[in-house]
Image (cartoon, rainbow, N blue to C red; front, top):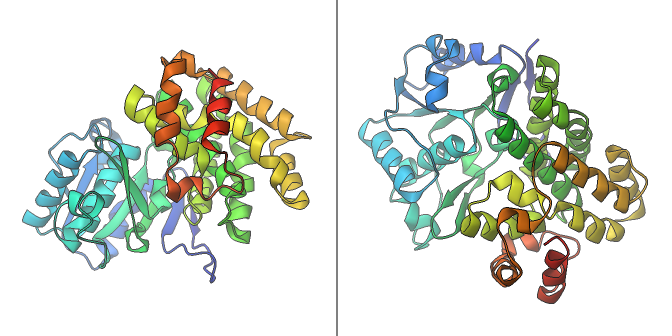
Length: 373
């Protein structure tokens, strides 16, 4: 059964994306294209999708010929030029986070003009016009990008382009597209979704709607991620897809916090997968931040996690990380004691760290990271 979600908007919560969820949901794609007022669509997808039966069902779209492996300035600028030269008015992105990020930024910049660097490095341009009509179809359960108004670019460091005008118009979340997702990607994307939901809940920008989605996402992912990685079934893939989607509905309005801020130099300097990098500090920040939450808020997240206190919450997350084959120690990622200064120096992204209800000093963070070396 396919669910159609139109989340309620209020002064505190905005979600303009129309969402289709359920097995077989990807079959509505051709109908959405036909019924839209847009005449020329291009499909940007991973090479694996082009070999699937689902690809054969899509009608009347062009295919972007270049293979995208990483969200870089070069890749995104090439796609921007292709969209502009072809006079496309609709973009369909089918893939994981890399495909989604590249296509989402390109769809925005193609309308607003210039190159990606003009927005993220030079600061000479900003997103003032709505992106090309954008349909997002994730093939992993974790990023939440299909309902988020931002996207990431990697250069000498991590950059993020964000605007309410970048929300996808339509998201199609079909769990069947994740059925053959590799074990490691299932693990890293799934643990990232859990991290995002927990950070969303303790975020100072939280609201009643984001809280509701975050708590449901936390409970759902904790119940299903280990099996999705080690013994996947259709049912558990469905649960993970739902947990990831509502994670996106949650943190799309709050953003992330300290775990993500600290993760970026870990990914940038040691090429650590994003979900692994964000989750490695999650247990220590659970013990650091949960105690400062209001009594009711603290109790609700502990109940969602099925534990009695923050020590047990941290332990449950740490055990899950190990069970899905990821690392809990920085040294296991090739990071030494002397490297911690780099992480501390570059890990205080103000746009994210300040969203935390409790922010460690540089000295405190250094000690916390030594504790997981």
